[in-house]
Length: 248
Image (cartoon, rainbow, N blue to C red; front, side, top):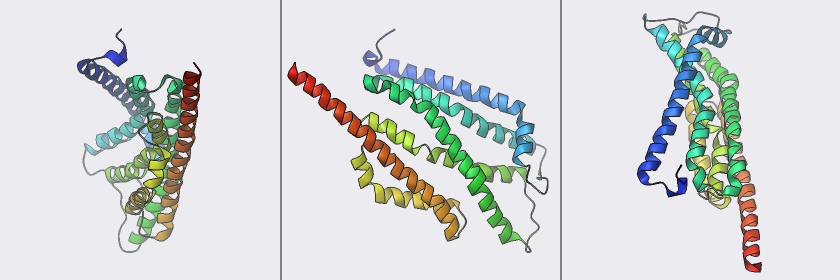
């Protein structure tokens, strides 16, 4: 096998294609498994509903099941995708950082699940309750299955991705692309963007905004602290290597 550092552009593209195919296969297998248990998953997701969801056409049930299975498959495939990305960029990562970077893979899965849980158990019921209150007394509230699960996914999957911020920052810091100084300088812009995201996806009341904004800001500050820790460690190792070189 050729040294990854000596691969041509074509070989790099072929390797990328191979890893994309493996990730896609993992997604398809996960989705097939989720479809096998999709009725049980559906029953658990609607366990607190006071009324049955409505279907507007015969094909809607398949669309709903595919949507649920797809969301589950994304959650299951994420660690596989992270591993494939790691294997692809591994030659660019300093050898002393390989072990630490590899341990990010389970961390990515855990952070994604935490974000999903935050969206599903906190944000989604809060926003749904607010919407129900707005329509109470004025409208006959009937939810279609497609609209309900689309809304649920919009309230959960994005937060699973947003909660990956510390892991992504750690990885990019190890690659030398980010450092705590850059992150600190970009704090105002990052806060502004995160606040816009929070306000956009939450009901128009200050309490809901705060419930979402505060965790996002804390995630960014945690990312800066993680980047600072990794950056200082890298500088210390570099100084030790320079000291050994000078003494030699």
